[in-house]
Image (cartoon, rainbow, N blue to C red):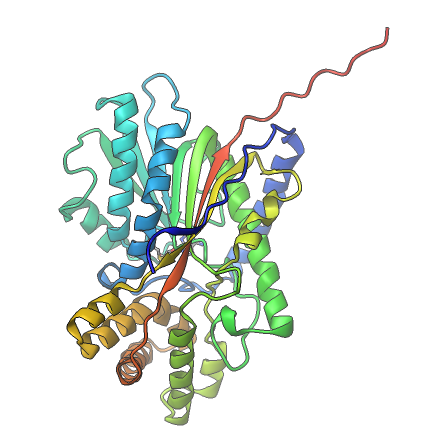
Length: 401
Ligand SMILES: C[S@@+](CC[C@H](N)C(=O)[O-])C[C@H]1O[C@@H](n2cnc3c(N)ncnc32)[C@H](O)[C@@H]1O
């Protein structure tokens, strides 16, 4: 497979519509978000700490890379405010920061070509409070690819708050980037009998996940629409789902699920703990991402400029085909699963020592399983570019007098 888009279907720029009522919905959804966040498992969706995510997140890095031209276009086309106020780039769901360096550099480079070198640019990395911010700050300070290395007028910041809440005051953000993060739901709506992944659920459980995902996407969009300035752009990158309903990760998730069953038989995990192990990651189809825009063409003053699905070849598999090193293939796939998904599964275990032993054992067994049955995990990447429109001015009512 190649990195060529397999579906390019830009949505035409919609007509400006009255949006006054729409922003009221944002406030209702925001209140709902606050109530839900209190019920959210603290470690839900947080990546493995100690810099582990940065080391093993090459698949999200590959997905983000495919979206770079879209981010660059967005930085070139957003409406730049005249004056000297800082430009603001928001990085929603930054995790430990390594994968944010290339996109932030690219965005800053494009903005610099428009505003010169003197204008201040603020880059604000947003993640959940339990994120490994120590590693993020280390990357911002030491990484050779850090975007501030050759630009004294770039100022990095970080915020530990869920993106299902207001993260910025109204109309502060010029350019938003959110890569491989909005796939995580605000709240896990149901346990999944016999599995841990939403892609495997059916019936009522599937319906509960579908509803949660639809609500969360609307809430995410509403909140970002408030934060964006008029003329600003938001680029959202997702691990995608094809129109046929495939993500490419099914064999990986099924292997891990089989191993969890073995771990219950071995009494490494209790049956009750196993039942509570559910991932809050929900890959959406293109139609689900576009649904809020279907009726009015705009949603909360946002319009869709691009919505493209790509195939992302598995780089570990490409290397394996060249070097035949099955150990390395199994290690890379198992370490990827550990860094991203095991912390959420382990949150069902209350004892910290047992959580670590669980993570070690699951990774070890998964690696063996994957080495015994080597397979590629070619996946999908969905890229969306959204533009914030000016609210339409309603003409005064005409009098007949
Ligand atoms: C797979 S990582 C993606 C990191 C990085 N953007 C990348 O492309 O590699 C997902 C990140 O989203 C964050 N995340 C998930 N839910 C979130 C929420 N409600 N608010 C803020 N961040 C969230 C997680 O904590 C995690 O750091």
